[in-house]
Image (cartoon, rainbow, N blue to C red; front, top):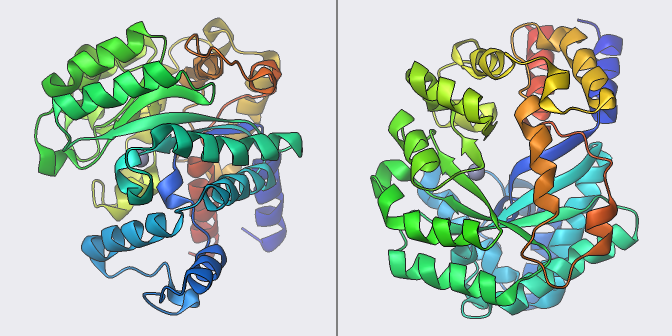
Length: 357
Ligand SMILES: [Zn+2]
């Protein structure tokens, strides 16, 4: 593939209307911003700024995460981080995002969830006022937390009724934590009863049983990853029947060795199953359907494709029943035809690799 075709393809992907639905605020730091914050705080950098994101294994990465989140200790910095993300989202053609935030990582804000949410919200609100895309927050539990801690977080979310919050989430390493679905079932049930949507990390560090627990015990509206569901045909059928969306991140799966190559990755198989219904029957706007057709016609999608249809139900998350101070701008924007930005980035890279190869 020549450079001009690649450029056209990248441009087509940028202009495709998209939503990013599997992104973590803990992963949104920019090196320059961290370097500036560290300078202001008199905190040494762990390594030179140009190598700040080069990690020496998982332990190094987790240590870095603590360090970076620790620097975002003021409302202004959290707002700056949130605002910067919206700028990148818009530059990539994104029209909306669900942002996962796990309060356990943000030590400076422990015990001050309301203030933390207000600070993040200030950045997102300023971004929207400047014409950047709206963002909803998915507040995440960690798999290693206790049932009591989960109950406390859900109590706090119900009490705060923050208009920026659209969902309860759970993330963390299931391979290390073991089976925890039963532990968190009550917290997720109460969150759902209070009007929050529910999104659950499962089926990457856990197998199909983790995905099944996410559906049956946690009432997941969406599953982040979920790819290991492919190991159990009855589970894939259940996902398709209930139209439960998967936030698939092939890049993450390959980096963590869940699959050895994109050719071995089940994203296309999963897409074929959930696409049994014609796109229009899934309640899709015509513009989204044509965008999807365009996607499939791109050469980069010969072997991998993007699972759009289930996500088309997800913008409902932008209208949480929970909010008592409703965010009018968030409710009025109906411009989003969701897809998976991260997958698109991945596909761009895959096309580039193919061209180089
Ligand atoms: Zn994730």
